[in-house]
Image (cartoon, rainbow, N blue to C red; front, side, top):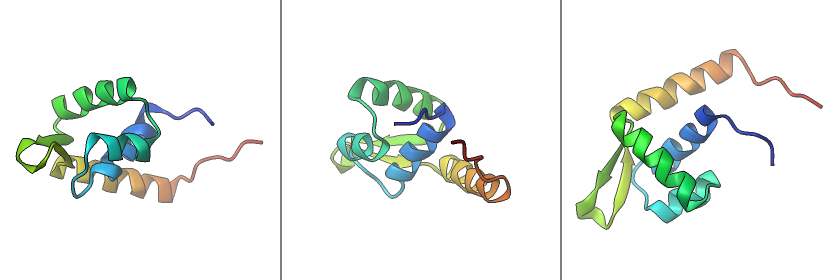
Length: 86
């Protein structure tokens, strides 16, 4: 597996949590271990990009701020596609 930046991992988590998802679903979609996921959850929640919804069976959801980040990230990806290395 290729090296992924913290930004790429953050985007994967926010995309997985878009519309609501459990820890397990997010963990599998972002290809992270539980320990790694806990670290990212802490950072994302503290920065207001992800929220925990206890009333919906332990669901996590991407916030409006998180959705704006995804939109900006995707726009940047369109303008500056990743350089392919051999």
